[in-house]
Image 1 (spheres, rainbow, N blue to C red):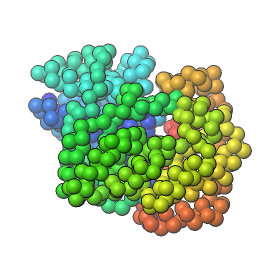
Image 2 (cartoon, rainbow, N blue to C red):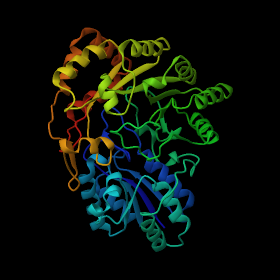
Image 3 (cartoon, one colour):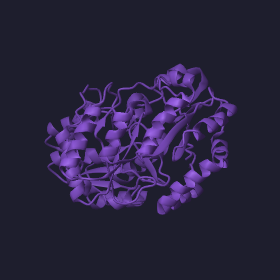
Image 4 (cartoon, one colour):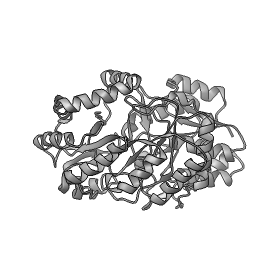
Length: 448
């Protein structure tokens, strides 16, 4: 079987993940879930396995169709962007009309509301790796494989983080992918999957209730290979890189014992950071930590089931520890248009300014179907599945004013300017994307 794993074309640069999708402004991540799937298929497919990232390779729909015909592809796997769902389905339809081959769609929303997406050939949920592996192992022909995949739609599977020991980076050109404000060759990987926390606005990529760490020997072997291949940076894609101090300690010892050095980048909850864990991530080589704080309002922390202690003295102590270790910090915030007024948002400028982080990102909270937040706010949400739309009925567009007020403060402006001077090329790319990338009518309105 000739199988293509395809990241669909799109008018501008975006990142698709199972649980979210967003505009790629000043950076671009590989479609890691598709790359893991392509690796798994290649290891078990008796025919040829192809991988095309139309975003990174800047391929048009016509070029994708030509590739499918030229290589006599029998089956396509793709991931539908959650926030770009309607555009992606239109693209799928055109591929189907031009080629006539079956397409396997991986989609949170389509798997949640299967009756609304009955026009799609096969829809896989968050266990797409396990289902594909099971279907491929039982198949002797294309017909059997597609039948098994269809049958797997309603079967229960247990998540296995170790179906593949590593991703096959031979599928991609690493020069096409970048972390924001970062220099050098960058690899993107997972230490583990899932999240032990239960924030009610979040779609957990794999829907398990605990963190599933990959086998340590797989991680360490992959890091050795990446060092040999000349990678300088590692962007860890875990939801929280500091969940397991035990693993961080073992990772630190492995890196020291093998003389391996990288600049690491990753996301963490600030309540998972203390003196011990901050010392560990510094010894490992973390250059930057993104702090998913979301709100500085204690009541909203409880409302989101996030439950981080956001009292300023505590936050400032932790950020001071990171600063002393010369670890850069990005702060992620959300705006709830029904729970926060314009005045609340602007008062947050004063609080955030006292923290002294290197840069901030603010986004409008999107209530996704299937989340606890959606059920809690259902009466205040305007939503439809086909076409996909979801938003609060009242929208206050205060984000631009937040940034305007934030950067009016000289210290904030100087701190960000200094940071951008450190990364001139990446800053220019970010500026270009912010100026010229449009939202194309999709539901996301990201700010950075």
